[in-house]
Amino acid sequence: MNTYRWSSSCLLLLVGISILFLGCEGGILDTTPQNTLNSEIYWQSEEDAFSAVNAIYNELPGVGEMAWDRYSDIGNLMSPSGDWASIQRGEHGASTGLFQNYWDSNYQTIGRVNYFLENVDKVQENDPAASESLLTRLQAEARVIRAMTYMRMSFWFGDIPLVTSSISVEEGRGLVPATREEIVDFIDNELTQAAGNLPVEYASSDDIGRITKGAALGLKARAMIYNNRWSDARDAALEVMNLGVYDLYDSYENLFGYAAQNNDEVILDRQYTRDDHSHSFFEAYAPRMMNGSVGISPTRILVDAYETENGLSIEEDPSYDPLDPYSNRDPRLEYTLFLPTFSDDVPGSELYNGEIYENRPGTGTADEIIIQQNRTNTGFNTRKYVNPEDMSDRSNNGTNFILLRYADILLMYAEAKIELNEIDASVYDAINEVRQRPDVNMPEIANTGQSQEEMREIVRNERMVELAMEGLRYWDVIRWRIAEDVLQGNVPGMDYIPVGETEPVQFVSGIINRHFDPDRHYLWPIPEQELTINSNLTQNPGY
Image (cartoon, one colour):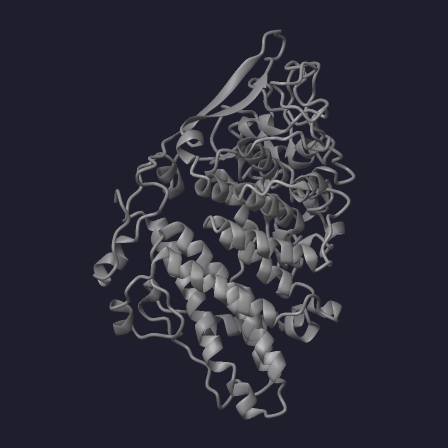
């Protein structure tokens, strides 16, 4: 992003602006910021407008997005306590604190955007030389963040109040919820309008990280696909493809590391820099054998989803060797996960410190399964975003976190076409482009007249393995309405042969016994506090 608008020299200013945009406690009851910006000293220049919208960029999701995969079938929590563990056991309700936290924080984001949109025009009033087109563009950037926030809120809670201006406490008490369809209509219109006011690319490298036309259209595709609006999703994804500025990065292995920052596959990301605006992903997610904290335990469901190098499932390929289970597999498996030692003769992945990843009981390593909580309880560990450059300073990482990339666009396009039963060459081309990345090079899906159901399974599996550990699987499981099938019971972990033995053992994590009730759990409950304050809100079924 532009240096004087986003560089480390501006961080203290941005923090100050962020504080000025704080909403009140209690969610949407008062979305007027408590500390408003006096137009006599602010909203005077383009720099003020930039600083204000940059503060809103702080509301973009970040590295914490990977945590969503812990709540899906491809990941697992590290502890049986806490709100998310309660949710996974199906024991949650309207008083569960996590729901109020999400409600409050997201409506505060919406409130900040509303306040910005209501006041940014004052810049031109105070400075007639300010560029109208520039201010329009900054408003479009803010609108995209607000639309993204509403996409998430409506996905979680269903019918919610649609707040597009600052309101008082009393006004908040009388808000009537909009239907989810009305919210999605709003998102559609907002992102379409914003896309028309955003550039395809920015002329200056200083503006890297700002929201573009492709980001607005890509998020529109995602919002539409999350709500089964297949024609709209297809068209939005195709618009992104036709922009001609995005392409797959040539190395999946390096895509999530420092060398690949801001490459042509990235459509939207959360920008970080070491020292100034860093994160601690390595410390939170790396194996304990590298002094990490193992923030997620990938499951065997994910591991088994990766095909053999022949393009067949492990059940279909007679060459698959269950006594050497990770050999000759889709390369994305090893690029995504640190794989455990299977037996005395089949070692695990080599870690960045030169050690072999060993999890088997009795081996005494820091990642030995079963011994205690807060270590991998499946035997697998994420490699994606865990970079060797961060070993020496585990809590000061600077890799950007990708929120939307071109591979996702291709797969959303293919999925939308499949759901519309428009299965043509472009569907196979989109899927195969993802599979044929140079360092993946999986066999193409041949057009042999597959049925809609067969193609649906192909694209869903491709999403699972391509986007694993990026925080998207939970959303897919919920929108596909398969949660009652895949989020039940204990979590399968690694197979292994104990030290000195010959017969394989299958490890199953008993840390959480999952339960998903399709009659109530596809939506979260409206927080109890909001129902008490506003009688117009209606609780979701089953709560």
